Amino acid sequence: MIEITPEFLKSRWCISSQWRLPYNLKLNDRAKQMRKNMTRAEKKLWFDFLKDSENRFLRQRVIDNYIVDFYCSELWLVVELDWDSHYEDWVEEYDHQRTEVLEAYWLKVIRFTNDDVYNNFESVCDKIKSNFWNIEK
Image (cartoon, rainbow, N blue to C red; front, side):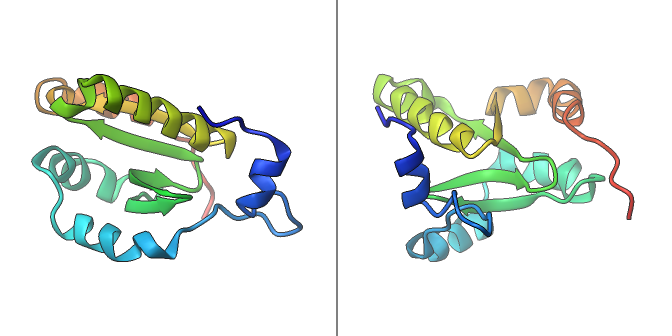
């Protein structure tokens, strides 16, 4: 378990005069590959909702040492889709630790299963929309 301390945040460049989320360049190629090879559930959520949403979302965004499925910087929101392997004990612990780190950056993390996307798509979209606000352009 990671302890989120000011020292931890400073080590990730999060407490400085210029705020920005940490970005691990070593994950850049993997993130590009993941954008090209999205899962069926990710494609559905992206093309049927997030791509044209009122707030700009990015796919497979590197944050710290993680690649999140979808990220909206305007809303400080991460949307994660979990598939069957996410229910194994070690993966649940990893997801929990990952969520703690992301929340330490003041991000809100919401998770859905692939089954939610396939069978309760409107509900998934409504839950994501509940985090939207209109931004004057």
